[in-house]
Image 1 (tube, one colour):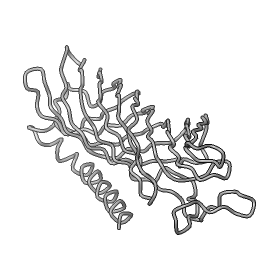
Image 2 (cartoon, helix red, strand yellow):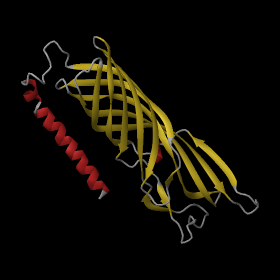
Image 3 (cartoon, one colour):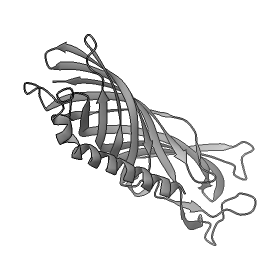
Image 4 (cartoon, one colour):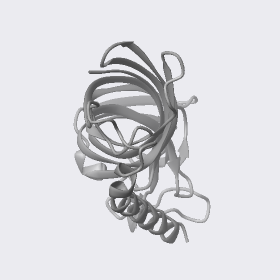
Length: 264
């Protein structure tokens, strides 16, 4: 059911953008909507966005532990269809991540594991922006669309808590790995919803402040789930190694970003 909803959402957005493109000629013939000949059809900008990100687990036994603070920066390109409608895209470098807890093993002992991911993506948004007319020096806007993220780097810290036969108290151990590309899917797709304000400083120079929610569609984990017994413990093979099932863990990455930008 969830996969059908995602596919339907993508189809609806595709049809919406096609419909808007088909109506662009009609907009240009409307004297109230079309841009004056002296106005620009496009603009460029710079953007910086701190964000708060988290995983939404779709797998039993995997839980979100805490949010991750990250940031993004990049270039924006916006094409004016009319005075109040525009298509926004660009190239964004994103740093985000999150924490997941689950059961596993270490040194053949049962362990509670917390994995803290620091993930990097190159993002390409395709967003429809709807703006009000300028009120004083301010313009208000809402936006929605899709964003594709291409994974290119990561860091992860695994923290283990376990009991051995010689210690009366739980033991802790952690290790850091600088590249876990084999555990992370290459691509992510987000539904983007947001809004904000623009302030005209002078001429074509505009400051922007906005807030966006980025809802990840695609599972970001590419790792198999251990086999558990009826007591909830991880099953080991004859060599005391973790026995894995054919099923993979699943968690979507979401984040909220506070956007600062300047357009020229």
